[in-house]
Length: 148
Image 1 (cartoon, rainbow, N blue to C red):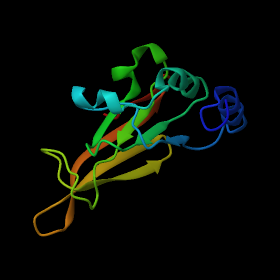
Image 2 (image 1 turned 120 degrees about the horizontal axis):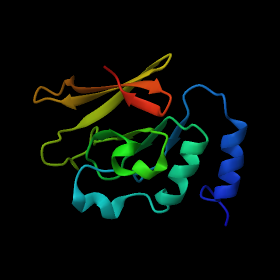
Image 3 (image 1 turned 180 degrees about the horizontal axis):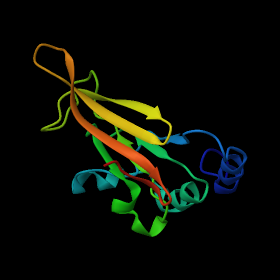
């Protein structure tokens, strides 16, 4: 198999990057979602690639496609994977494809040492984006955990 999902090739690339700072994988399709009706849109092959990401110390997996902002730890949906990674799904920044209860939005991510903060900014009626929800995580021996 050729391309991004050649798992052996991907594993070799991840191994070469071990020891790097924050390790991020970005996909169009998300690996997690908030609503059951969106599960059909999750990344094909995620069951194979997530354990590899965990073995190689990946920190953050970002995706979009479903236009429904969502942030969680991988252990919520994938407890069998072991090492916990942060999963962030983007909403819709400037299109009309918003979801009920989720206006136009974007995620702002900040990394400081062993801490990762993801703040969702929502577009208000006056067209300004304001912080709506903050998710803070800290590194732990098991990967990432919700910060106190």
